[in-house]
Length: 344
Length: 296
Image 1 (cartoon, rainbow over the protein chains, first blue to last red):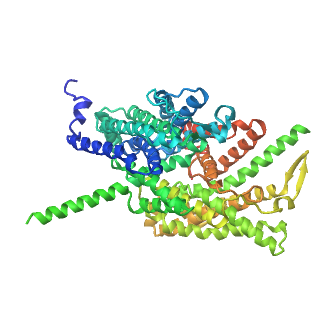
Image 2 (tube, one colour):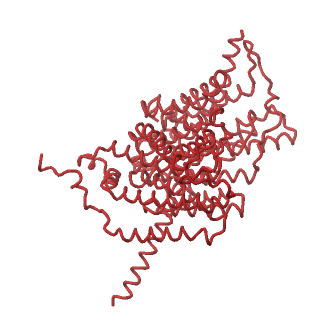
């Protein structure tokens, strides 16, 4: 038995990143740009950036499943809903205003929920996985619709302004709160989530997930328990999406069942694909473009869905690697051009 | 007496829902069976059928047509929308047959978004319904229950369509080609059948089933712009419960979902959709091939 190498040895060194300084620089640039943005951007745009942060956190989770594990969830709005309704229940029903408490409860609830849902779902792949997650999402949707006394039914619930790190900002008017303290709070959460997910996908665990995605049989021969890895990925993914939902809810001030409707899950997948699922940063680019482009298009025409549908259709057919894929291939072409120019 | 009346009411409205659901689900199954694409846009075809149905009926009534003959303009509206079949199949779907299922699903999601605004553009956002058609047919009284005649007509029409489909799939040359393509497309192609033609025809047939379903439902209920996204989850439940890609499955699933819906509406409305999703999850977990089994 001693001759058999452990799982760790088998996958270690395969493609673990050594260029962490690049990521550190990128992270620093994000932090700087994010910190300066409220000072230069208009209030409304800064407010929109809040939904960029929250969707990005959720999409980090969704893409852990889609890209790194090879499972398409069409019900991830379920976890947005868990986060959103947690914020609503704590602030509105129980007057517990602490944002940290909201995030902690969300992590626990979405983790438990993801464990239960994932336990059933990860036995399946491909379309059956997509359909099961969709069914679970819609189960929560119909539950929220019908339990009028508890959740306000289709009218939903209010989400009150939370305390951040114990500080009360009640005197501040809404926009100043969202463009100031809440903005920086979300930025920090977003950067923490980003770093965490980067470490997850580049860890031994993350590489095992990719091995399972690329060749499940071979991964199993190597001693990787497919179901337990998929389940763990699902739980992590659900927690990220839950936190995204919890961040989103105070900014909109309101949650309703449309939050967990299957089209919302579809929008999330849309963002992932728009930015490019195969790149770590793709989904974030996707949510950025989706949110700001929707704002621009919706103010120009009421038929923004048509335009977005057309964009998505063209992307699926012609550029499945998304915007990030286009950027990267352009970058590589540019580099090869400059290198060629230098060489003779 | 009271009891039988209630039971009859539940049965009649359940079977009516079921016959509409069957039409849409049959279209979904046909396309899934042959092209292996789960067409989220089938809900949009249903909604388009409903809206064009209203327009056609209004035009028909304005020209002095009798409300009792409204089944014809409705069916014609459904058939006209069949032109969308080749457009969508040749314009979009044919590019993704070789791709991963996720992309196929997303492409039909994109189509659904587009159609939603097409409907908004032509018919606006207010709920619409054709005037006085439903009542014109009157009701018949059986065992103390008042059953709308129009519902019976639709149930009849749906049964006729179902048996025509069954005949077509089993007995005709085209039906054999469809079934062969569903189980082994390469072999069919090797035997000299042009698969792109089969795909266009099948998708058009699937489209027409959806649009006719939408057109037939509209005298009973108002057409609203969200009807597409709400119907697709019901149709999804039907095909999962019955078994993906199976015609018999669509029939059984539709009957089950339709009856459950009207039963829970009558007894305990809070349960309505939750019960259906629970059954969907149960079927996916314990019998992923569906209640009726995997053969298309």
